[in-house]
Length: 204
Image (cartoon, rainbow, N blue to C red; front, side, top):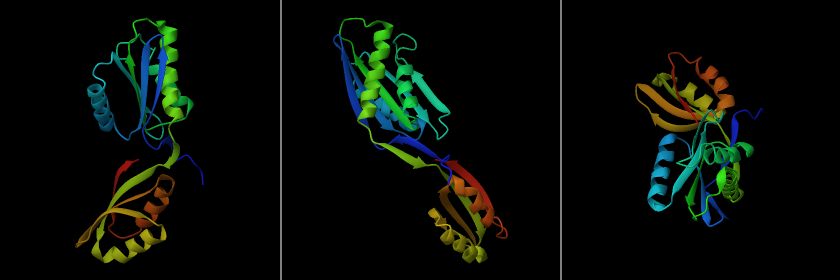
């Protein structure tokens, strides 16, 4: 089976450190799934490391890595967020946030020194992480008449479909998840059931 519905990420949070001329760079890597969870992590770290001079970060979201952001947080442009982001690119990762907290040591490192420090700290955090390959799944809602229950359940069983939420009444509702590469085939089978309606929810 083609692997274009898979992506690499990290299994759990990890950390790393780097020091240069008194400055301390603490890198923290997190698996994330949406921007809201990223905001919550960033807020928590600003409270935890409230006395740090900079909280620079980069994140990537989506199996196609199309959503990303870099933040230098007051460091010279391109000296922090981009080298952090570069470590995720070089490891082919997505759904990852890396924050590097800097405690200033009194000596300016210059832009080359900063790039090296933020890149190295981010790499140290990823070196401690467990890399995993995950599958992109489509989440789909279907609505159908109760009389079609046996036909729907037969397909669900044959395709080994994971049901997330169900409601059975005169008009029934099921939310299920299926591997993205299998979604078209499954939906095509279900579409042959009379009066069955689809609602595509999301991919994740």
